[in-house]
Image (cartoon, rainbow, N blue to C red; front, side):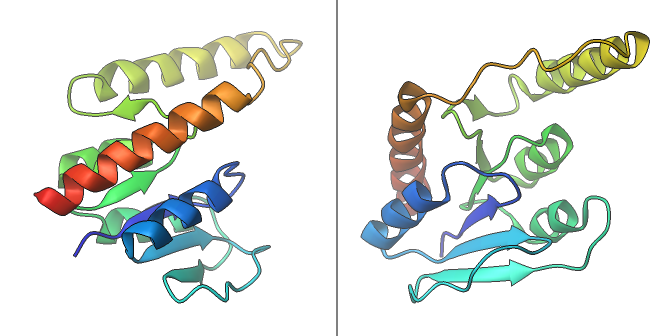
Length: 150
């Protein structure tokens, strides 16, 4: 059965994902180090992992497989999930797959190097918009339908 995994730390689309998973009657796992309230929704399980670097990511990576959908903006986690056969979406609805994950990892590393080289470089990212939320909902709907039909 398809499971929807959400890398829930700083995820701006948890509520939207819950609505879509509930409509499809699919289990959803919200995985975080803490700070999440338990859900009354029977399809949603809140998984609190111990504090530590990448513990939530490792928990998801160990479980996600073919037929599952993962929502994350963490590129190393996305790469592991793509390799395991899961469909991966970012919060803005963009798809991460075997065709683009290498480029995304390289861009992540380049940006980390640029930030390290210029300690005064701040932010630079764009804000999360209604259009991003709408693209996410559309992409999640398509991904779950694809996963369920596979």
